[in-house]
Length: 449
Image 1 (cartoon, rainbow, N blue to C red):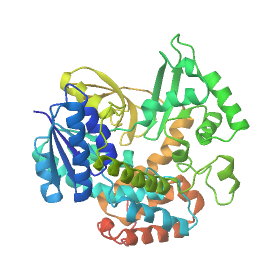
Image 2: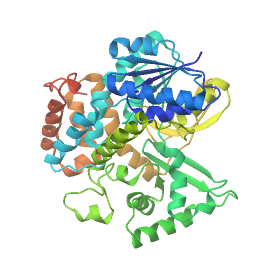
Image 3: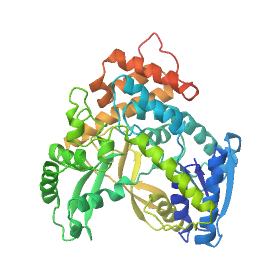
Image 4: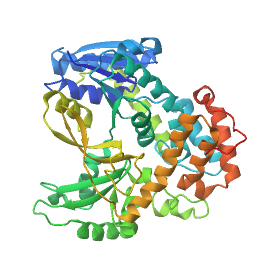
């Protein structure tokens, strides 16, 4: 029997989507599903939902088991064919709140703070030690598993797993498969959707729509560039930053404008507060989203307890399609986050985690060679890769100076704050995160190489 282990199963909505997809997939629907979490209540809630889906959609063919706490983690992982990771170390309260509120004291504003910026750096530093423990267990009890990472910051966490563990790892995000569809719909070009061909490559949340052609092979970018410029000039909408990317850099980007507003030094600037309104940037968006999701789940849970039917239709998340391709040896194409060790993108570093087209089959993940990105796009990616690599270095060496350096080289943080303030802010955040950041040593007297 196939075994699918879900780490962070208390992420109930996401666990429902991914594991519900598995129950809708003939090659996977009779699997053993191991749910692991450190929160008893949330683990039980996920078990409730998934048992209902298993009964209502899957005729009870899956076997669902729960595992609570680190002491049971090895058994959750033992002999797993696939492991899905969706943990959030520290949760919304207190850690996400800390990641927003302390920087705000220093005048550093954020929108999402889960991928880049000081929030993304801190999230990576408290998550990598947990994932290192996962990897140690997997190397012992399921060394041949395929690890599907959904946790952010994607490039930092996936890059760590790929460089410093023996576990086969691919990072997954849903922004690739909806990128061009959402773009064409937002520009009133729905008639170009059917049969279109595209190429997307870069890094997670900053992958570039390098090519897009209609079913007849016609380049759609000239029309896209024209319509995007007209829309930004004539109306306020939710994708103004990425449309501005098209104007300034020539290409559209995979992840949303609220994300990309904080991945650079251009849009959130205390000296130019008018830019927030000009580009319709939702500061503090992620905390609002978390609160909304928590309330939404409470309401849905009450409906379920009151007899509401739980059902599921297979989503567009990559996980079940990857597992199906491996099990059936039927090739499937994804956008995956992989180590650039074979220079799939030639003008990005070999130790960077890049997002490129990949084929999946019975032998696993096979990244495709993309070549060189346009120089301005590679340069944009490098501004994020610099901080990503330094964050991983900090996690591996436990040297706090690398945390400072990651924050210094983060484009948004470095543009807003002076270096002494950056170090002071990092120290305050490390202290506030307490036990989650206990591994990071005081600054040594010597400069780290």
